Image (tube, rainbow, N blue to C red; front, side, top):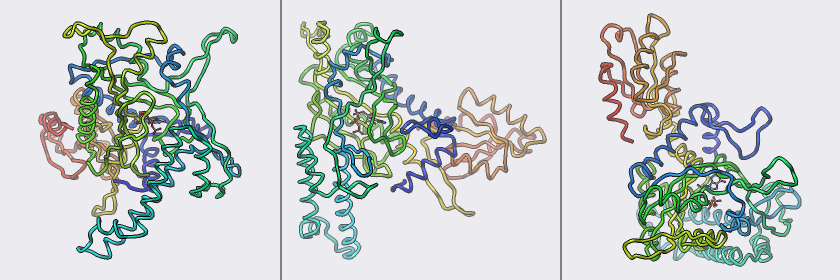
Length: 505
Ligand code: ATP
């Protein structure tokens, strides 16, 4: 597992070199925070989508799917609160002219003090060895106590000023804690302003007849406005969910950290409609379900944690983030929100149409409450890569390997003729044709077999099948496993069943 910014750089260059992710418009010098997925990236991305869709929709009787349009009636965004409240607090450094999110620069400051405390504890642990009592050390070390006090006070003030939209005090806090711009090194800050994150455009060919449209900043609203149509046509009974995967757009002020924060990204969202009063038990249910999902995909508990929100969004009565340990620290990967009936009621108000459910058990109508799970596909992609990227010492140096869960690997099998002659390519293509409808297979004949194994390790292909002269005599091949690098000789007829058995996850 990679753990620092050097490792993020390694992952970025690995993605570029191995056709996972390219900067968008690169021959025009790129477009910031936009990325393209290459031949291996698109496969991994599709596999993550399939894996999510399978567990959230196909394997459940209580969730159905939807694919709503990106452009929607502009009033939807008034009803959802995005026109008035989807704002980030912005601050500029007057010397460097660089722009930052005011809340994030305070959070970075807090992260730095947290890192200091961790360092202090690690140092003490080393010094005292087996006799080290962590709790006692934290309680008795003046320096640690001072820093913990600073962390708590700063967090409290940040939350208060954000909740009150008291940007004057937030600016003063930034000045008081001494945050400087990393580029200019000065604390010459502008006032904080609000900035709406929605991209807008116009519909219609004649400019003055045009009306303003927004590119959706989340897929959730498409689900809410289709709630009744879906419920009726799919004959769903509450509790039930509607899932959708699709592009969202946010004019992020600071889009950085590779595909972690982009301006155009994909979300995998599910809105679960429940009877009012039952939302908290469903909230807990989805917290546990989603964590299990991450665990089964190979994220251990040491790279995952819940972060419960102290400051709730205007629509929520409970919220938590599942955070993943990215190379730049624990950051939000997925949000789970209890959204109450805010959205449905607001759409009812704006349209004068009822969005209520008739519950035949109680013979009455009600507006359901909603528990949402929302995960960024691109962030999940990055998390999967961070969790899989390894540099392993081997006999003749170091190999780079992506230990991707086989189910997510872009290609499951690489079919490799030992040499590019003696009918081996023909025999290999025959085997390729035999396997291709069961597994996504990659065929490669360029370079020595050793180099091709290394390349497939770096691409994350879990199995290599090598065809040699013996194959022509007795229809056996070498099956090589990516993780153990073990090689076994098996007959072609056994390939499908052997690999299938290993492909459970
Ligand atoms: P953040 O605090 O990181 O800006 P958020 O709380 O605004 O995220 P949500 O609105 O809850 O995010 O969106 C749900 C999920 O969509 C997030 O957990 C994240 O995985 C993903 N996501 C949100 N914004 C972006 C972005 N700009 N680029 C990539 N993924 C994103």
